[in-house]
Picture 1: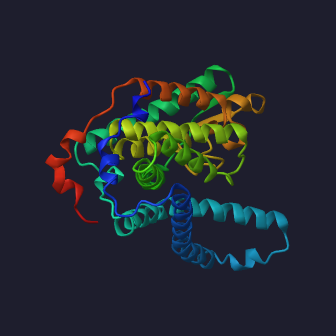
Picture 2 (picture 1 turned 90 degrees about the vertical axis):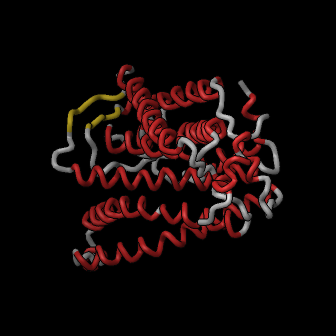
Picture 3 (picture 1 turned 135 degrees about the vertical axis):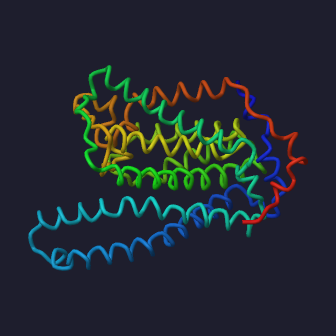
Length: 329
């Protein structure tokens, strides 16, 4: 069951050919530098979009109001207005991470998990798995009486719903490329796979430390998701499947079930589910279902399942796919 921590998949074998493989502590500092650079890069288009939005609705007067309630309402609407653009802007995460790995570490796209073999099949399978995983968590919370169904609420919001699907496709890919395709694989190419899995999972959780409603249990669940995502990537020897799981996990909870995504309310959803305050240990309370024991249960079971299945072995195909390993960005 634990062979995943001993046998290196082909993406890690290819990453061992990198020209720059820094010490673990230096790698963490570099990761933080890359992450901060990405955040700055994302702020530029978001600032421009926000400025246009304020000018469009003449929001400058609202920012100067002395009415705290009116200002709070405006800031709430303004924040919601930025959610979808922020998801789209995460494309910069994928782009800049690839640029770093190609230009500095001299790693191939293949080593980041961009494997062409079964890419579409892996992505579609992952999309289904993500929906099933979160659906089971919803079922657990519903059967426990801590989550109630309030009906179908989409109305005429189909276009916005599809826009959020595109946004989460971009966002799900970006986090997996940054945490698993870059950081985990880079660490595993020089050190143990166990260190790579644990370190990237902890960093993944810490990146969400400022989310609304964050607490100990949400952090534990984020670490568990990171562990699951890491093992899934290693077992599948590809970035495609876990990117799809990440996408549909987020899309399902916010835009299908109408549940908060890491403390953030969804602007549009197919259905509405309401969490009971008394059952927040199970339903996650203000953080959303990711902060409760329903998701803890699903993630632990998912980790056990993925550990028990036989992983894909593409290491024998490396020489045969040499042209796939070295193509440029």
